[in-house]
Amino acid sequence: MSKLLKIDFVSDVVCPWCAVGLASLDRALERIGGDIPVELHFQPFELNPQMAPEGEDIDEHLARKYGGTKEQRQAARAAIRERGAAVGFDFGPRERTYNTFDAHRLLHWAGLEGRQRELKQALLKAYHSEGRNPSDAEVLATVAAEAGLNEARAREILQGDEFAEVVRANEQHWQRLGINSVPSVIVNNRHLIQGGQPPEVFEQALREIAAAG
Image (cartoon, rainbow, N blue to C red; front, side):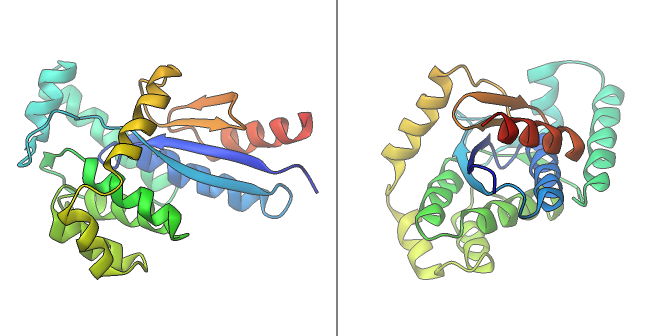
């Protein structure tokens, strides 16, 4: 059996390419099967660290951040929907974007509970497919329960600032390493794969890294 691959998936819940990237990575890992043992960790990144709790209209936000015409932004979103569909991820209507710091706090806790992947997938679905607010404590607690976590414990975390320091430290760690766009996939702390790549790209890269030892 090949040597264990440690994969750090740096991403944000409100990042559409992160949803595509994770679904694509999941397809690649299914193809690899038992050939290569993998340890997958989700690392925090905030696209909107200064955003107010009520969020912002997504089209206004994208226009201010990236420019372009409304037609260009609509075309880009259509392309993302198509890429998502190709890897089994369904994008629904999303009218607003939000800050996700509390979601990252819950994801850190979920990692300690062995349910990080389940929560990450549930959060991506809740926002991108269902348009739910990932900065709302009620939504987060409900999604945590849907992912098999203790809802009462999730609410307790959300009511305080538990795991805030470690999440901030983790965010700063990846930023210091030069990660400023997501998704970024880091394998064995040294191989970087960026963007929502197709499954075959992830699969080939992981097989090559495993073969190289």
